[in-house]
Image (cartoon, rainbow, N blue to C red; front, side, top):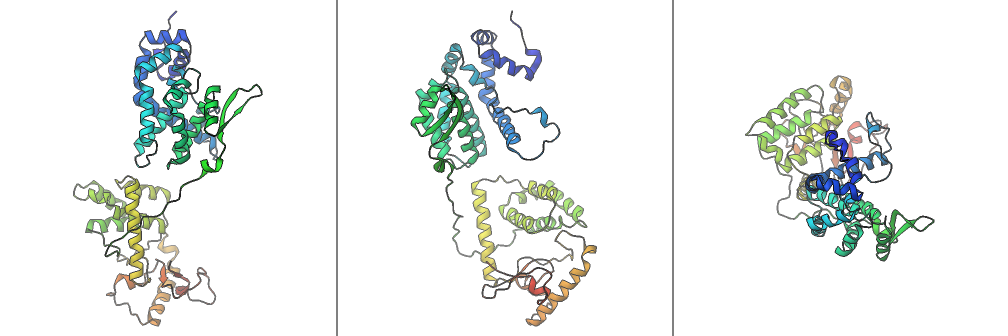
Length: 424
């Protein structure tokens, strides 16, 4: 009998993978050209889909949150799901086909070439898929010889110890556990300082940990980029469109004008002549600063960040760090008086309704007016923004004057003084 399971679609793949682990099943699937088709699919696509499946399983197994609706469909028993290459090397004919195709050599070459990369998320994803493929190949007696002949095991161990990407380290840890599923693999790992747990009969269990656990858990230290240059003051936004965009993002936290702000951002995003501003890291830095210092609901935060067509990689993070450094330099140049800007529209930008806090806002304005009169500063509307004391932003004093922040209920201090903080 030669039954076919094509009518089952994706549901039939796990059963066909079971057939592959036997000599008769593999030969039958090989004759029907199923092996050829699946090898092409796994080499280009299914390897990465396997990574997503495994990481979803791990996320569900390690989370402490209650299960959501539909989570009962993801049943994880602690064992890695069946892998095409892992089932393939369980037969002699499967090992022969794998050697002829040269896929394993491509896998190990990619690991050696990109094992320590950290900048490209696509390469990171492919690296994890390749590591899982190599680990599943090494989880059987027939496949461990591929790893030993290519001497890829010490490379995987080195990546597990020193990779700057923690998810890559975790993948290598699980891959080493797969390699430790065989006696030969456990013996090889012991030569590199990894101990494998065994049963009472001396059989490996697939659980393997390093002898030097501190080395494995150590994380390299890093430093923020040292920005050098001439004028490091916080630069003004380049165009009026950028200023309109950041003003609209600020107004998103105000429920009174949030809809109008959302329409403004959508209009800027849709127009061809203004769409490019959402690729500016300087505007992104301003938006991140605004979001982190004001009260936004999570959907609003998500909406604001998704406006930007910027990928968070190492160069972008370095640019954001430079903009942040420029902001501190601007604070020093202005004497450390104000973090904020003048609100010309008279709207509250701290995310609460004006009707609920009108009395507090009025009290703040009176206290700030008294503070300006005490220091001999009259607000005639022409003062620069660096010396303007707004209603809602935090006021900052220079380092030589230290004032303890006690909140809004200070018996011995005015409300204005309670908003004064020590500049870092």
